[in-house]
Amino acid sequence: MIGRVRGIVVHRAPGVVILEAGGLGYEVAITPRGLADLPPLGEEAVIHTHLHVREDHQALYGFLSEAERDIFRVLLGASGVGPKLAMAILATLPPAELRRAVGADDVAALEAVSGVGKRTAQKLILELRPRLELGDGELPTDGGGLAEVRAALEALGFGAPEIREALRDLAADTSTEELLQQALQSLGRT
Image (tube, rainbow, N blue to C red; front, side, top):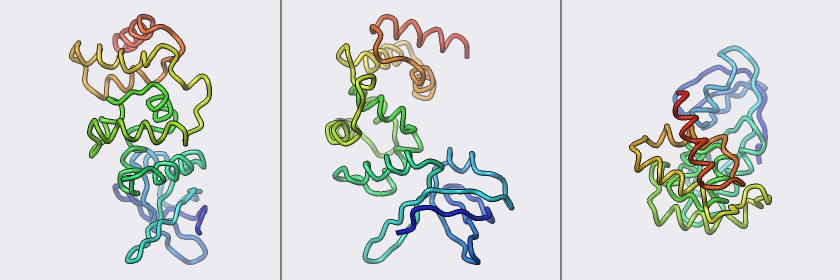
């Protein structure tokens, strides 16, 4: 298993980076956010990796943190989730947002991922909740206030990217009304 690669960034393209380490060039699939956070060409980078092996194919998936790689592995353990879907989920929802969405039963947050419909999102929430080992602060205290706020913002005509940004820093332990007020204030600043 290749768990980590440290090397010089020699090529960058959408969804992929090549690191040269020890005379070998490792082609690593990476999320757009991860690619943007990498150093420029010619500089050294460290990528935590997961080697996915099938009968006819081997692929290396890379992440800038061990936590993100661990979430990727948890996602792969869910039925119906392969590496491409797991990468799409992490490209849309960073680990903290994914944990919050699962903890708050926020189906709409998972539906924002390309290739995930309502049924798949509901199934993912059920499967991921015990696997993500959510702490007390990440479990909903009011029956999914974040999901209700998301629905209210959608009804007001806000788009999915705006809603994701507004919900990103909200504390799930406050009332739905306070969450909605904070989200609207956040949207008003942008």
